[in-house]
Amino acid sequence: MVGRGSKRPPPDTAAPAPKAVAVTSAASALGRTTTRQLDGLRRGVPVDQEASPLPMARVENVDRKRLRAYPMQPPTIPHSIDGYQVDKNSNRCMLCHARANAEKFQAPPVSVTHYMDRDDQFLATISPRRYFCNQCHVVQTDAQPLVANNFEDIDTVMAAAVAESGSVHEAAVASKGTP
Image (cartoon, rainbow, N blue to C red):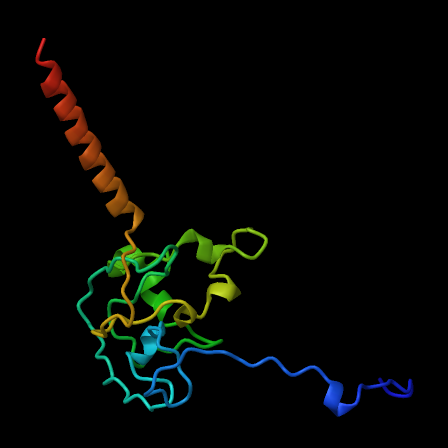
């Protein structure tokens, strides 16, 4: 504290500073612990070493709808968008995906939520907050996942539940016998 004339104990009577204790391996370069690294993005490369970059992923242009990797994931773009103009003056995506043109181009229309403002009022055109499509939607590539994922979308979960309940129902009927 400045200006209060605080008294400090003499250096020989001060309490010793606590020592940090860490379990490290003999081969540790920067004091890494022996526990397994959890960072899947580094692909097992220690933090004190430079990881070589993965090769650039190629865009898949197969027009195939992919399953989602997490809840509420925006759909991925199943075609190349090289040269598409999406700026404040033009949105090339809306040529095909606007609700008025989707059937003609056989493209999925954008969700009605894209026509809602932040107060949930419907607009005649795409909401400004949903106008820049590649803020949320990404092109499909042949890149391999960096971390394991066991997410199942609701359709898969429901299909499994129906299949299970159907087999349980059939087993119950078979055990009772036919009337």
